[in-house]
Image (tube, rainbow, N blue to C red; front, side, top):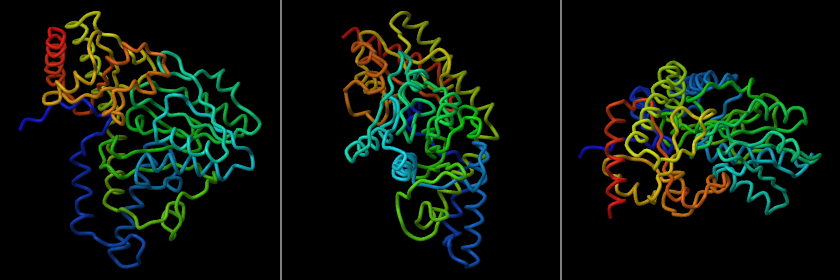
Length: 381
């Protein structure tokens, strides 16, 4: 069966062939426990060490600041809960934004039920936070700021350097969910001024079920789990060596091919938008910001179309998403579009298209024809 043109890379990316080739021996042959002192255990321990170096290099960190997790959700939970509990003597006030992923907002909801106060910063029509609003929200008991690097639905890139400087000025820990931005835009944790940063492997061509957490040296957070001494005791549990190897390789590739990949994603996105505008004209309304946007992410509304119906019609030929992939079965307006004050009609017609590093112009041209034809057919019904 012919596979559909895949334009849903913000939901998940396919595993890179080089990544798969590097991880497979650690499933089929090198089965040692990285925490043991057997020869095979030591071999696996060295593989984990190399992966840690590779992840650190991609974000400008030191290898001893990288801790492997099961993915973005765990990294977000560990960062936010860990920082909240470790710094509750300073205060129980947390600042976040109204456009965060549920892996952040649900943690904040939990903390609010047990005594923390959460401030949700509003955003503009493109999903951007306002720095003056942030400064005004800071109180003497603010212990943590957690704001995503780039939005998974519309692609908006937040001003992390400025946020980091404000947080540092007030002695507040700063966490960012960088699941969508790692490998897509330039990143250096020291320049951004973050203390904690979340990485999700399946967003950068590694398998699902592996991620990492950057913890700036000297930053103390409480453990999410307790056990033996793996990951320097920060994240205990027998190391998932094949997947750790895979994440390390994916990060090495992302650094090696960064310019090529970002140019390819941006070029494909621009060609797609130009093609749809040429075919559908003023029926297209763009939600994504014209600048400060991920190179691969395009959120558009199509007038007179219900997004979930269009996605369903297209699914055999083109894979896209109606809003955030995490809400793919819901017809409710996404929290992100609500926070952006997108009118209901426009929100209901919004689709998210996210290109990948392998998306080529032939696929884009085919997708333009298929999408525009489907729109016209739906309107003729």
